[in-house]
Each structure stands twice: as C-alpha cells, then as structure tokens.
Length: 131
Image (tube, rainbow, N blue to C red; front, side):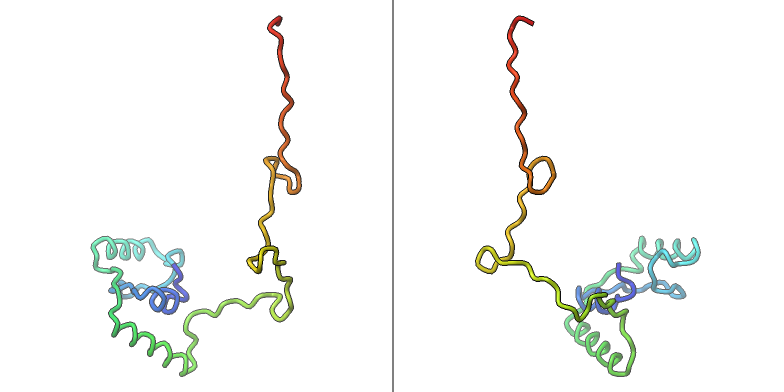
C-alpha cells in the first residue's frame, strides 16, 4: 500500500480510508514498524474488525478534498512528490505511425526468440522399414 501518499493515492482516489488505526502506532509501511508487539497489536485490531476499511460518504469525500486543498495552501506538502525524470526537458523520440496514427505495428518474432528470424522447420527424415 502507498503509505507515504495515502491521503491522495488511497483516500482521494479510491474514496476509502482505514478507520480506527491503533493509537500509539505510527501510520507507516509495515516493514518500518519497530516491534513485534506493535505488529501483533495491528494484526489483532485488523482481525477483530476494530481497524477496518470504510467507504467515504459523498460529504466525507468533499470534506477530505477541501482539507487537502487547505493544507496545501498553508504550505504543507501532502504526500511525497513524484521524482522528476532524469531526462526532463529534453525531446524524446516518438514512435512512427504505420496504421493511420495508431502507433507502430508490433514486432513479429519467430519461435527461436531472435528478432528478425523466423522459425525454421525441422528436416523430415524418412526411415526405411529395414532397420
């Protein structure tokens, strides 16, 4: 799950949230939870249904969206921004158009797995019944 961008990638996109996350337990990727006891607490909370996924109502969706906008306007970074491409700002090659603007035709491959070579049939060896 995307814990870093939970507010935008999970709640805003899928309109669900985790309700009743155990108190005293940081909301982080499970591999970053420090102790076995904390993992057991979370596991028990999920197993009993105390901590559960709930679908947001239309009113909750609007309130969440407004809250995110308010926090962003206040200068808070909501989530982790996506890393910029190393070749940002440079032109990249565009694929040629072979079929009326629908993109390049897929490469045809033979059974040998080598591009540009087709599969070769095996030579037929007829045997005489004298053997």
